[in-house]
Length: 236
Image (tube, rainbow, N blue to C red; front, side, top):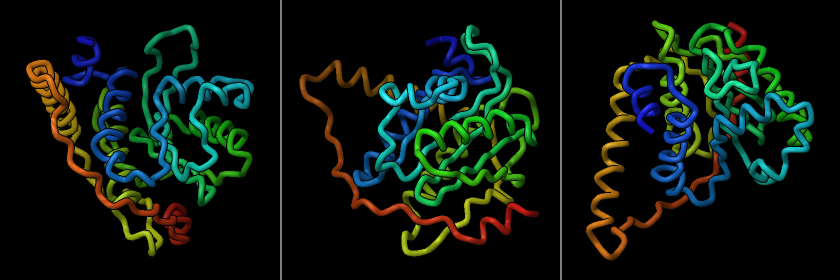
């Protein structure tokens, strides 16, 4: 765990660090939308899917996507299946199942383009439908060689909250991140703050015999549909 926390402080994020962030988003955000059918696939599952010659053989290990509307997949460029925590770059693939589109957000130009396209093809086999692959050329770009995982985490939260969960479901939305700015340092601070809050929460739970109060879930919303203008935006 210490290695995972250290990676959040000032290094390339580990699989566990990204998985922790996904669990946090599921608990703090997705839980408030019980009717949302959005999957945050863990890095290990995404990697297994990317490397598998037969994606259909993984059905029992993967979530049931039959009613899923969107899937977030962290993409890693590790080509060695025997190397734990391998690879050198993270990017984010967002599959809109209901729209038949796969958006790829890469903070280092098109470094993970091959891996993202390959994973999209594997998702097509699992879903039994074609997916149009759209490389998001206007994705925010990192300024060093270690912030890619932080960009994935920050983008995931923004797209989940601002574009899918809390958007107006009656209107089509754009998935472009044009003009968006990501401060990786602030992103790391936020992740570390969440860890500290979880530690304090655990201490409070141990000091009491009953579970802490949890607020009632907010009213759920249907996911918005992706706008046709998205295709035009990605051509430029």
